[in-house]
Length: 250
Image (cartoon, rainbow, N blue to C red; front, side, top):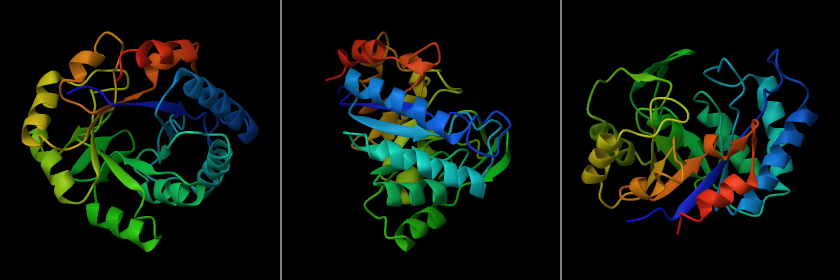
């Protein structure tokens, strides 16, 4: 097994409603810069996320949703690879809606099942609501990539990670994401091995901590990597960094 897909992150600047927001045009400018760098570097796909909306809300406010949609449409007009969305902390309805109108092919759902404690409080997964909302807006061609015991949060279930992973796919998510504890942290290899052993034929994405030094090791158990932190130089995506990792991905 080896890594087959390289997914690059666009970490959006703060959206409207946050004190650190500096205007939608600036968010768009930075997003398009990062898009250009990622595509020049050779990524296979791009995942857009409202990373700098800090502290994260459980769901987006209307002002954030409006700003996010404007940015998404600009990205969609300039992108040449498949792309998807995540609306932090767990606004799958916003992510699915944006993907539907902007032409995204997937969404990331940080808390699909179980319940977690995060900075925004207790967040409960609701797989039925995710799937039924996707059907309601006729977005069944949009894949659901679900995190397994997501980073920056603590699962209240206290059960083995592989049990959570099996349940996620049983409840109709399309792919899994396995992460470390925080952004930039590599997943624990014992977690990754356990998930792969339980689900030998399922699609597993690495959601944090990938570098040229560890990508081969991660590829023993995973199919794709989602990369943001490693690609950054002075806070923005850098094509040379992307190319460096691209060489290690088949």
